[in-house]
Length: 152
Length: 152
DNA sequence: TTATTAAAAGACAAAAAGGTCTTTTAATAT
DNA sequence: ATATTAAAAGACCTTTTTGTCTTTTAATAA
Image (tube, rainbow over all chains, first blue to last red; front, side, top):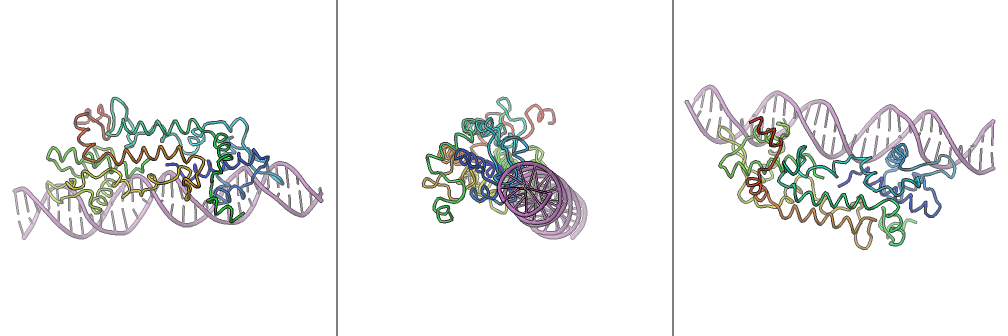
């Protein structure tokens, strides 16, 4: 469904926000390890997210990433669009440029329902909402709980 | 959502079946033109589909593609899986390997609903069902109706 | 049987996605 | 000040996806 980059970005941002809520600022090494993503690739992705203003960072000792308080309640959709564009949210299931009510592809109606559901989900959830529900629900962002317990 | 290759394959197969229902066997040139896909790429894709048995073909004069009568009622899902695997149908929204009820990602429940909808759609429709509904509904597989009318 | 038509086969290439690594910059602690 | 820490910048590489093209094979029509 999403690109790997999007998956890593969302997992990482939720992890950052969970840690921020515990007054911690994780660095790339910690984030990459926790979400099971390649270190250098994670670094690059969060560098981009920082440049776009979705996350903030501090260099040097005690540095790391944290969410701009203004950005933590943005719908996931905003982040996803910034990374991979909005094709998933507006596009045709058959990949047609001019697919609409007047000129539908064979899947138009039914695919529309799915697209609506996707839009509803990513518009209704935010990094903050996922971080909060994750903290009460013991949720996984990388290793399975069994694995992360073994590794910790 | 789907890869370009999948989109071209589905559009092309629906077009082929519509033509088959009119006792025609379109060739690559016609298919590629009608679904607005690159000629050589379309050729390669249908070559693969023929090798996998999803379509059949005849060489030489009067040749072209047609659907194996046994295959025209296969769910779209089978074709999609043959082209791009089943990650979309079984995978986690956050891209986790071990995401399940016992070890959910933060989006597990809600993404599950979307994945179920996708599965329902591609399991319930077939090339034949789309071809039949397309013929009564004046549906588009490439150019918008305006464009294809201009071009014809 | 020869010319023509059209798919099959497969080499090649461009672009996008995914990933790695080194060097530079900035912050902090000593 | 300087040593240390950690992100920023950016070069580089690999794989996958998308797309192009030439040559070969097979079918049909004349």
